[in-house]
Image (cartoon, rainbow, N blue to C red; front, side, top):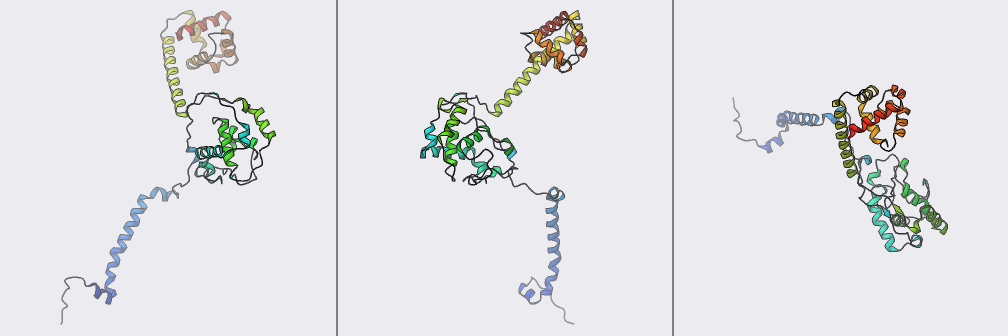
Length: 308
């Protein structure tokens, strides 16, 4: 009987001559594939179980465009002749403004294919298309759109941009396609509606972040004032005025808010009339309607004393 001597190392060339010997490698390979599939499944369990996938589109509701802090006033008069016959420099300025304010939705060439507009319910305006304009394609209609916006279509208002700059944007847009000519009647209509040749009144602008901070500060200040007011009410001695007040009130916070927001300091009669029109909304019980004028005077004097 001939005994085959074990090989010291694997001779891969011999394996190729006898492929059946490779059968033993299938099991560890199969085991590795199962292990890899299991790891992938565990790591992606949430996505797989909810049959979802990562969102690739930009959510336009999360896009935030900060408003520049700017003091209001009267802008320079618009040169209507320049609007009718825009110079290359005027159009170039319009292109810069278009890139900064409009490109994200309307795209580089005004095709309505900007990334921010991809998730909008209504696709942004394609300036190359002549149909479907909500306000129209004439220069006065385009100016109206920029100033007032079209909220239902997701078009924001740009009234904070000076009128001359809005015309610059329109002048650039008009170079992208064939638009109706600018007529003197259109410019006269615009001038009459917005007083362009005499200058435009611009409102004060405040960034949204700063506005939120001020609202929070005002809320904190108001809350501190109320706590002081509440403390004085709760710690005041029992007097006819305090007993009358407590008997007439059911919500101290509403009384404080309604009194502070009214012109009670300058006109008690107006405040009394406001309270009687809706006592519950002002923090008083309905029975307060039976108070005499003298009793109302005591209530108001008591509130003023607590606010000091």
